[in-house]
Image (spheres, rainbow, N blue to C red):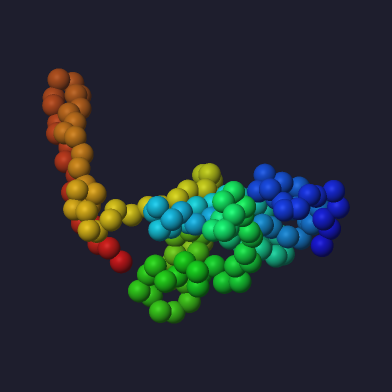
Length: 160
Ligand SMILES: [Zn+2]
């Protein structure tokens, strides 16, 4: 591992320098979002699927020293995030949006569309707050050759 010229503790904005010094390692760094009870992406290597090794780090705040942070190595990302589903078998995680999938085939299909965007944080409504769980939309009318057509949308949402 080459860390020449890097200052430690390494700032997230300098992770790319680390990756450039270590061409076989891709770094994936996330942080906990306590408010949303979720995680969000701080850094994802553009070579996350092409480099030989992907290292996932979780950046945690030091509760004793506000402003200080510590990197924690995440050995198994699907185990960290997989508990969000009822699926008991191996899970597959998208590095960009952290959604969990039950099969590698479905993950690969998802990634083709997901990885073209910047990393995202998926949040879900709080089931104890019904006002957050209500899907609404405004009534729109589209005009075509003086004919008004009203489109409606219906959806069945299921929490898994
Ligand atoms: Zn994704």
